[in-house]
Amino acid sequence: MLRLLQFLILSILAAILVSWLAKQAGVTTISWAGWQIEMRTSLLVAGLGIAVAALLLIYRFLRMLFLWPGWLGHNWQARRQKKGERALSLGMVAFAAGDHKMARRQARKAEKLLGAGLLPDLLSAQAAHAAGDAKAAMRYFTVLSKNEDTSYFGHLGLMRLYQEQGKDAQSIEAAHKALAYADGLTPAAIRVLAEEIKSHQWRAALDRLSAFLRKDKEGLSSFGVQDGLAPGQLNDPSLLAAHLSVLLSEEAAEGDKKAYLERALEYSPRMIEASRRLALLATDSQKKSAVKRLEKDFKAFPHSQLADMLAKLSGDNEGQFIARLGKLAQTSAYPDAGHLIAAEWALKSGIWASASSSLAEISPAGQTNTYFLLVADLAEKKHKFAIGDDSQMTPADTQNQYSGFGADSIGEKEQALKAAAHAPHAASWHCRACYQGLIEWEMICPSCSVLGQVDWCQSGASPPLAIENKDAG
View 1: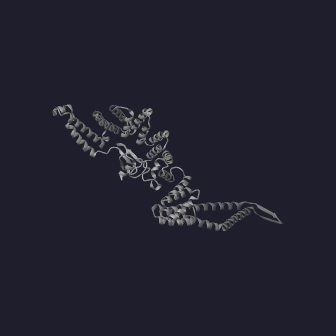
View 2: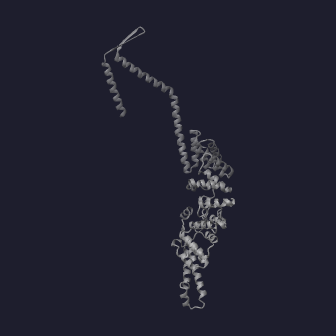
View 3: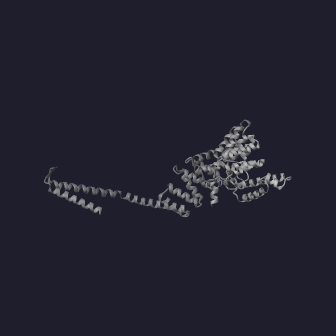
């Protein structure tokens, strides 16, 4: 409709122009080479217009005639490009869907239509790798590694292939070459980190892991066995960094041991072993500062080992030390755990009143099996004390003198033991990689042989994410 309207408007304008020219009076005389031509001016103008239009039509025809082969070639190339892009798209869809055979077929078709290029070569390499054709994958990834734009992906693919073939030296070499094109938190960097841990290059591993923790701590969770790591190696990367710091302290000179152990506590305040070793390093002149450090660590994360070290260095008598633990527990991040340790010390020292008051401070959420076992132990000790002292007394005298000690203690003990059987377990050592419980702290988990994932899971604290996921499953 729009074209018809344009045609009508142009026709009307042309008719108006012709009518106007026809009405114009005037004669044009042309004298040239002995010839004299006279004609109406309106006719001359119309003839010139027709001649110009004819010349334009002839020019366009000749231009189209000369450009026709190129036009045909362009259309043919456009059709090939369209078919090649369609094959490439179908190959990517097939690869994502898991049909590696179809992906390879489409990759070959795309390569034939589009020629060598980033996407066709990459699809061919990935499809060949997924289909198990290591030779073809190696060939394609080698080609990619020689192109400056795709060098990183080529070396990364070669790294994976060598890793699957058990060629660790070649895999690490390819990983280092890939890092020259893309540094940071990449699969190549994680592969190098895994090798550094495996070959006991603690300093290099700690430096690399520290950089990752500063830049992208959350991104570490996406790497695992496929990147050369042991299963669960990075379930808690900060804890791994703390363990590496402790390992470096063992190899460091005397003056550097303290710095590495303090660095371990910066990575993980739960690193009880680092705090214990720091206390062992304290000399007589440094005991006061060591005690302050232990108190700080105990408040951050109460543990019986810290309490033992604090007892050795503080010089307190039993009553003073139990009072100290009680004050620290009051301001602790985990007061229930602190009061539980204070109750254990009081019970061991025979100061039952302090044991009772410490147990009374523990909230219902912190009443674990250890809590009820301590309650039962306290009741038993009270009962034995009462029996030992009432040999010369009547039952009535014994009951009056040891109110709450005698027969009531037996019932209290039985109730506490029953409650302990159903109560949640108290804090314990466990491995964050394999979720196994341990009797004591180990640098390497004896169950899964993973380095740096043994941790103290505090009662009342949130469990590790990995354990939450496991329980949810």
